Every structure is written in structure tokens, then in C-alpha cells.
Image (cartoon, rainbow, N blue to C red; front, side, top):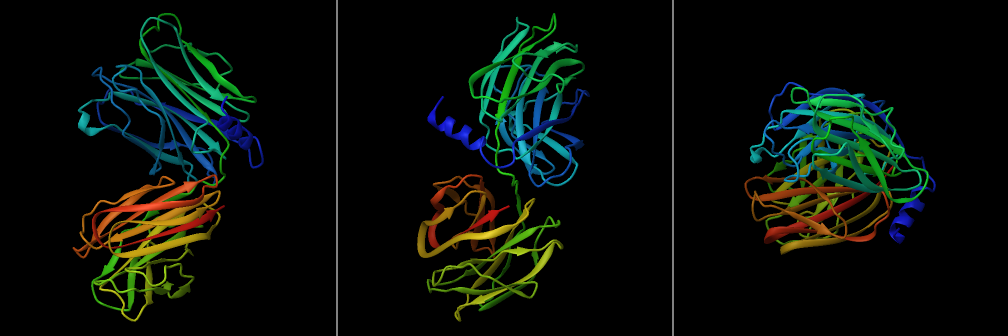
Length: 458
């Protein structure tokens, strides 16, 4: 047991709401339809909760004896984290995987499973088991997967467990449809389900184990009934206590104006995904035609003046504000500042759902008359959402690269007015990260800017 793992265990066993995971439902496609994208529509995911994470164990049965990785999975439109993926090249029947996504809204959701279209592989059937988790970290305590050859009824996997952790197991092979799969090592088979795909071939099982102690490499064994000795795979993911906050981050398209103005007003900036408790975070840009220093000092949202977070006296400044707005798919946004204004104005919004509150924590912004990369430093406390917005004036189709002390997910990369590009990225951090550099690297050195806003969520 490493020191890091002991610290992780101790943190999980401390204060805060305990981890809860409950089996909800399972299902299968048994139509033998070979597609690269398969959708299970209207799947039950349990009662809605701001702290809910939906865990999905997935099995695939292929009619062509060839497998590739899961390319992506969405649950209710929310991208899922793939914790264990199909083992490409190591098996040709019965692969399994486990994914999860924060989905605080709704009692049903479409589960969309995507395989790489370029692979040319056909998939004949899918099975799933859904678990509803509360206070669950998006980073597992441990995650293991293994393939097995034909010849044995026992399929084993080892995974670490800790105080208060819960392990989800999934196993599959190419056996003909049957019954009688059982688990050992405390894996709860009362919540297990056996399903098949590909015209009654493909035998999959799922189980759950709750731990009250720290164990390094606990072995879970799934035992198939007599005759089910085909090849396949087995996986186990141990989930741990995490934040009770599970934000859903989306965004709208940018609105822009090529006129040279000191005040830009946009009547209908995109603000999608209206819901009770929704937060809208507009980022506003003076895209200047020179290297003159400017400041954004005022932002109004639906004619209401907002608190502005903006760098002072930089090239092409980007300012931001935070608004709680439950309704509407567009909003009127205006901003102003330096008397010299800009040659282009841009307004674009991040959307945050699934949280009780989103409060300002930190902001940093900068700009340059000619640079291929910009870096800012912000302090990231626990339960923080980082929103980053960048601009480069060299090209309307430039790729941005995000790097630094923490990892951010790219949200969008959009051109405007045929002359420039804006890009956004975000990341949610359950534990405090301290002072962190965040860097955006551009494809070309030109006038550019970067602003990063840190929000503390509950």
C-alpha cells in the first residue's frame, strides 16, 4: 500500500456524505444489427440528484470476431469518462467496459455507445447495467481489466479496495445464452444481471462489492456454469467517495461584430440548456486591430449590470461575469471599456447546470501583441470549476492546445469574421490544486489573449 493510497483512503473515510451506489436496471440489444453507434433510448437512471453520477457497465458482442475500443459514450447527452475500455487486439468475443458520467437531471436518459467509425468493425449487439451513485468521485480508487482465453469456468480480476469504496464488476464471454453465473469475494450477485447479444450468444454478468477495509489486490472471481468456457474479458472498477457536486458544463456559439466600437451590444447571445438553477458565464472580447492596451470595465446581461472580472490594460482583453439565469436560450449582452474600443467584439457563454451555487474564487488574464503561447496563474481550491477562454487574431481555423499544472478539457474552437479564432476549455477539481499555471498554445504568433475564471461550486 503506497503512502498516496493511504492518504486517499483516509480522505475518503473522513467528513462529507458517504459514497452510495445502487443498481438501477439492465438491458440488451439482441437484434444482431451491426452498427458502429448504438443507442439505448429512455433508460432508467434513478432519482435525480445534484450529486448523482451514473455508472454504466457495458458488454459488446461482435459478429465479425474483431473488436476496437469504445470511442465515446454519452449518458443523457453528457460525455462519460471511460474507466476501463475494451481491450483491442486481445480478444474477439465478450468484451466489457465501465464508464460513468455526472447526470444530475432527469430520471431517464439515452445511452449512446460509439465505436471508431474508421475501424470498419461491425458490432452485433450490446448489453448494459446501470448504477446510480451519489457523492462519487469521477476518479476511481482503482480500475482493472483483463482478457481470458477459452478453457476455464472461473474468470478472475484483482483490484484495490478501501474504506467506504464500492467496486463494480463486469464479465463477458462468447458462451451460448444460459444462467447460473456467480461471483466470489463478496461481489453482490443479487444485483447482478445476465444478458445476451448477437442472437443468443454472449453471456455477460455484473456485480457490486462494498468494502469496509483497505485491501491491496482483492481478487474477484466470476464462475460460469458448466459448458460456458469460451474466451472473453473481466473488469473491476473501485469507486470512492468524492465531491457531492457534479457540474454539467456546456456552451453556446459565439456572437461577434466586426465594427470598431467602444460598446458592443448583442441582442441574442446563445445560452442553451435552460434549467432551474442554471448559471451562465459570459466571456467578452475586445479583438483589437493593433497592440494598444485596453480594458473591459462594464458587462450587462439582460440590461442588468454585472460584476466584471477582466485584466487591466492588456492587448485584446477578455472579461467575464457570473449570472444565475433559469430561463431562455438567448440573452442580451453588452460590454464596454477603453475609449479606443476594438475592431471586433465577441461574446460567448459557458453554461453550468447541476449545482446549487457557483461563486467567484479567482481570475487571471493577459494579452500580447505577438505571441504563440500565453500563461496565467490561478489558485484552485476544492470543488472548483475552471473556465478558460482564449483568442488569437492570426487565423479563423487555428487549433489551440491547453496545458499546464492541471488538465483541462477543450470545449470549443471557433473562428469569427474570417480573421480570428476563439477557444474554450474547462475542468472540475474535487480536491484543492493550489496555485496552478494554465497555458494556451496557438498555432501562430499574433495578437492574442487568455483569461481564466475559477468558480467554487456547491
